Image 1 (cartoon, rainbow, N blue to C red):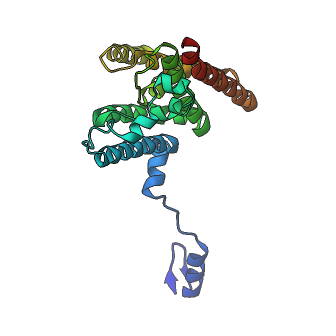
Image 2 (cartoon, one colour):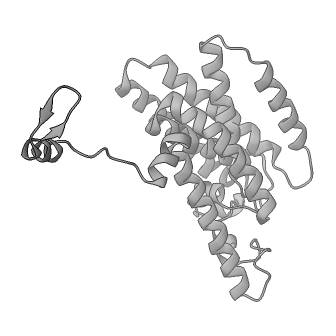
Amino acid sequence: MIPASVGFQCPECVREGRASVRAPRRGGGLQAAGRRWGAVTLTLIAINVGMFLVTAVSAAMGGASPLDNYNSPVFTELAQVPAYVAAGEWWRLITAAFLHVGLLHLGFNMLALLVFGSELEQMLGRWRYLGLYLVSALGGATAIQLFGAPGGAVAGASTAIYGLLGGLGVLMIVRRQNLRGLLTLLAINLFISFLPGVSLIGHLGGFFAGMLTAGILVAARTRPALQILGVAVLVVVLTVVAVTAQTAAF
């Protein structure tokens, strides 16, 4: 017999009881990271890092330094150039948001995405958050098509990240939270946007597209079908404007 908390148990009973109890499930490292930072956020970071590695390898194969990843055929084919988009290469509107010019550019943007993206993913849920991110990137690209230099190449996730900040601002207003910290951060980033090589136009376009998207999600929060419809209409409008903007200018 085996001593128990109350009386004794036979060995056969103990073995049967242990067999009937399921061992607790332990999530792997990736599952734990996904719960902590958000699966969509980590996936977006992985795609951005992966694209940087692809462009770095492409640059090295072309005889350039891997750190000068912007000197690669892949980067050239995927970066946003308004004149090329107007000529029919529409995919550049989105692919440019997954490219970065050097490690420093990549590092700053991915850190911002990890901080703000994980917060918004918890607040909105995966699919609404992903929609906000992609529409913000498209909004920034549309602004560049409207007001950017026709032959200038633009790349970076910052258009989408500014959209996340815009969306976060809308959600904080709805929840009546203190905006002082967010406004300070926006002021600092607005100053950075005036530095050479940084697209102020793209940042502002992403920011306002993020605000609009978050506004749609909040206004129709009890009607998912209306949320989808509203965001889809915004995507169509932005896409039509983007692909026709530079064409009309020529």
